[in-house]
Structure formats: C-alpha cells, structure tokens
Amino acid sequence: RRATGWAVPVPVNMVATKRERRSFLWATVAAFILAVNASFVEDLDDSFKENRKDDIWLVDFYAPWCGHCKKLEPVWNEVGKEMKSIGSPVKVGKMDATSYSSIASEFGVRGYPTIKLLKGDLAYNYRGSRTKDDIIEFANRVAGPVIRPLPSQQMFEHVQKRHRVLFVYIGGESPLKEKYIEVASELIVYTYFFSASEEVLPEYVTLPEIPAVLVFKDGTYFVYDEYEDGDLSSWINRERFQGYLNVDGFTLYELGDTGKLVAIAVIDDKNVSAEHTRLKSIIQEVAKDYRDHFHRNFQFGHMDGNEYINSLLMDDLTIPTVVVLNTSNQQYFLPHKPIENSEDMVQFINEILEGAVEAQGGDGILQRIKRIIYDAKSTIGSVFKSSPLLGCFLFGLPLGVISIMCYGICTADTDGGAGEAEPLMEETAGRELTDEGTEGTDEGTEEEQEGPNEEAAELAGGEPEQKPILEKKKD
Picture 1 (tube, rainbow, N blue to C red):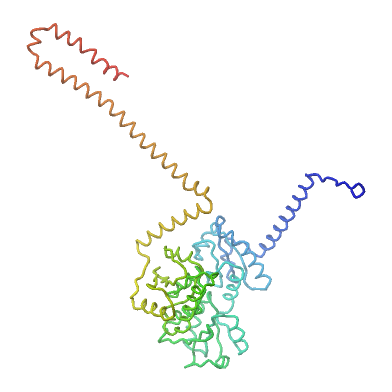
Picture 2 (picture 1 turned 60 degrees about the horizontal axis):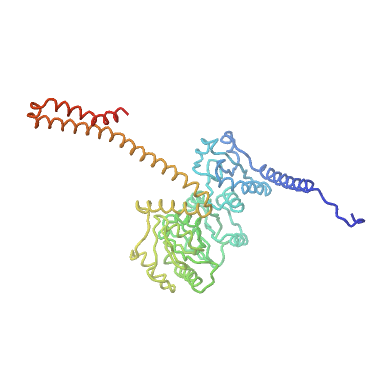
C-alpha cells in the first residue's frame, strides 16, 4: 500500500463483521456484569418463610409485568453487591409476589415493588427514595440496634455532624426510657435513636430534669415536655423533620403522618429575581423566629416549580406564591393579599388558626368527582402530548367501534320500522276501499234496483283498482 500509494479497498462485509463482533463483545460484557451483580441477590421461593428467621433479610417483592419493578432491578443488584462488599449481615433477596402470593400477602404486600426489611418477627416497610444509597442507609439503620449508645463527647460530636436531626435519651432506667425504646422500635424506619449520659452533652445544653429526651436540629436543641407536647411518639413523629425543608411530592407524603399544616413558598429555584428569593427568605425567617409559636401546628418549606402543586390542588397557581396545605384532608389555603414581609405571613398563619381564611379543596364527594375528571383529563392529555399516534390508537379506536355499533343499531331500527309500516299502510288502504264500497251500497239502493247490470259493470271496473294492491302483497 505504501509502495504504490493506492489505498486498498476494505470489503463492506468485513467492516460489518467487525462492527457485529464489537457489538457482541459489549453485549457479552454487559451481560456478564449484570450476571455478577445479580449473583449477590438471591431469588426466593416458598421455602423462604421457614428459613428466614435466623437472618436479617432485605427483600424486594416484585411483579414481572411491573414497569417500576423493572426500573428498580439494576438498582437492587447494586444494593446486593454493595451490602456484600461492606460485609453487612443483611442478606438481599427478591421474590416474585405473583408466583408466591400467599407469602407476599402474609407480609402485607399490597403493591409493587414493595421493599421490606425482615428482622426476626418484625417487618419494616421502606418508603424512601429508590436509590442505592438511600436503600442501603435504611437497611443499615434498621438492621442495627434500636438504641445506639454514645459513650463519649467526641462520639456525640461525630454523630451530630452526620445527622441533621438527632434524638437522644439522657438518663438511666426509667418508664420514660421504656417508652423511648418502644417508640424507637416503631420509628427506626425514619431516623436514628441514641442514648447518652449527661456528661457527654455539649456545655450549652441545660436540662430541667433527668431523665429527658432531646432532639438536636436547626443548630439548637429542644427538650420533650410530656405536659406540653403530649404523647412521645407523636412528638418524635412531628420533630423528625427540620424546621425548614425543600419540599417535594415524597416529602409531602411523609408530612401527612405528622398532622401539621405545611406552609410552602412555591417558587422557581432557577429564577434569581428579587420576588422569588424574597418569598423564600420570608418563609425561612418565620420558620426560625416564630418556631415556639407555630412548630406544633406548621411545617415550613419551599417547592421548586408549580407543576406538582397544580396537580395536587387541581388549580393553576402563578409563581411565586404561598400556599398552606392540610395533607390530612387535602384542603388548602391561599392568601387574600400578596405576602410582602414576615409580618404578612404571620398574620396569614394566625388567620388560618382562627378560622378566618376559607379552606378550599377537601376530600368531599364533589372534590372526588372533580379529581377523577381531572386525572382522566391529565392522563389523556399526557398521552397525546408524549405520543399522538398512540393516543389516537388508544382512544380513537374504541370511539370508532362504539360509533359503528351505534350507527348499526340506529339503522336496524329504521329499516325494521319501515318494514312494519308498509303492511300497515296496505291494510289501511284495503279498509278504505271496503268502506267506500259499503257507502256506495247504502246510498245507492235505488241504483242497484234500477240497474243490476251497472253494478256488475262497476264491480268489473273495480277489479283493476284492487289488483295492484294484491300484486303488492304478493310481491
């Protein structure tokens, strides 16, 4: 080639063969990686029920036809690989809930995919984001001890840096500690629980009495008071969130368990204009400065964009704006005037507490009907927007079939009515002829006596008139 200066042409089939080999190689490598990752996840069958009690299991209950389950599968394989590499005592498995429905129903599986950590006789539901890190963090938290001791101040400081919300029991054996352990066993799926002595606490912490339960968050701490805060479980469930949150759909779902109203600044995070940043700053200021006044009844935060909130309220909110949600009954409150400063926001909240602001939405019958119509409209619109041809096929084909059926039914009724009307008209015509002949007989008695020949002639002349009718009947 170099000697002649001419380029030797490469056969097309040789190029295609190289490409096919390369594609086959990559496919083989990908399949090998998937197979290796999948080897860390055990496929469970009906024998799992008897053999599981000696181990801690993290199980994905799935359905083969479920799209969300297929999306979770590669993440689940990564979870199994990671748990194996760190030497976790938690075993990772998956079970086809459609094939072993009796076992799935025994563990309370009602949807797919369902992630549960099985520890002895207890089954803990995972309700967090379906990411590898979040699932692993959940498994390590629940698989460990319910109450983790903090033996030194250095350990306390280390744990406090890692956790934005930290619950700590201070003291020895007491009824409060028993209650704390009971609540921790239930709420360990959400957060960590620790215990320590009074000497381990930072110097700025002062306790009115011991034993005590504290929560460290938002750069400060708060002490549980049974008389003011009520039940310990309800208090921990309310306090497990920071005072101000970046709210999304999943956070709203979790906040529904707290019983709090959620005050949200609906803004565009990408918009750096003064109007958007000011409204966010107002909510943050109220959450911090008025915590003692509102923390038992309100949760504060902001939401990026109005798409989710519009679907939730079945309304079209213009951002930036403020909305207060009651997640327990799907009601919401809107300010009657623009929120210009923190004083306006505080006044708006007080008016809600006093009942001076009209609640919109709700979960009544009319709202449920409106929700069904809105969801159907949104679904149809999203289908046509994403794939017009698919939308025409899914909705146009049934409408076309129904239209053809209706047309066929209407046409069949019309033909049948015409067929029944024709003999009726013929019968009526025959009766009219008979009646005319009778009248002629009554009125013309004298004519019959005078001219029998004329009567015969009339009858003869009447036959041609009746003949066409008889022929029609025959036809």
